[in-house]
Length: 181
Image (cartoon, rainbow, N blue to C red; front, side):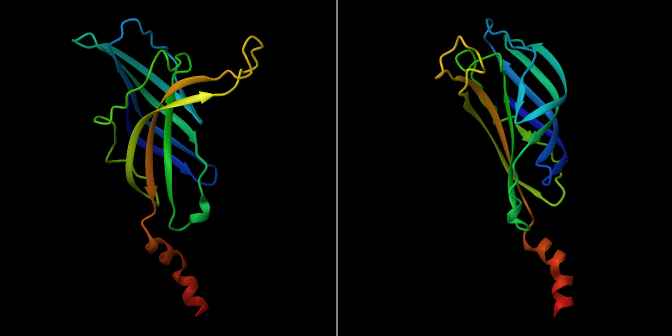
């Protein structure tokens, strides 16, 4: 699985949200695996999605989604003006537990478009991983034991953004310091 980030539509530290526009893809060979039409963005919601599916020459299946998603992230604003943040995109298939499917992160093809800009920040670096994600709840099902937990494979892309340093701070507060002096 991989992601190509085409745009960061918006970022609001005040509202703890950011909106991403890009592509998410999955490639697999297992003919018995039926990939559900729906996946979820953990800690967010999908605003729009368009699915394309192909079967490649070697029998491998390729499914690509054009995706716009809003994601909630708890930003630490107390580090202003020299703050940095980790923006994460977490995707999982709620119909496929980890014993049925495990993501393998496509770190070779996953990337961020050179056109992506986050006002006031620069993109420092990014990384992708697969992580087991467990829900420790019965979700109200009386047939399940209280110790029940469901574990899913989760694809994660992390994007580290950082302010350009003390220059922004001095530009913002220099007139105040001059006026006080």
